[in-house]
Image (tube, rainbow, N blue to C red):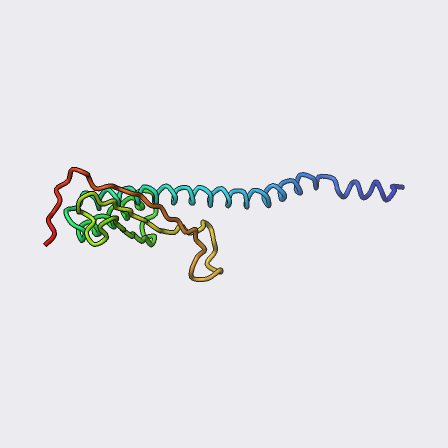
Length: 154
């Protein structure tokens, strides 16, 4: 007669591989999700940084402030699209010192801040309409040339 111990050993034979596979899957899925999230965050951070730099240059090279705002926004959107972030909300804010009302005057220093967001990957729609996202922002400072023509104040 077989003992209880021998019967139990025979029933559990071959289950270690099944347990190992399930454990591997359960650990692999979160690790892959974290890696995808980190890669998306890095892509977004690089895109926002590049967008701020491009927007600052576009604003500084524009002939006036109104044209500069349009060009800065277009440059920021294009830089984000190059990183695969087309369609993401983008905010471009421009500030100038020491002439806040006319950035293209004398020795102004232009600071451009670009803000955007990157949605977390593989998040199901069950969590709501607004998917969780990472907020990203970057700024870039561009001095207007010291030897630039200065307009006389009226």
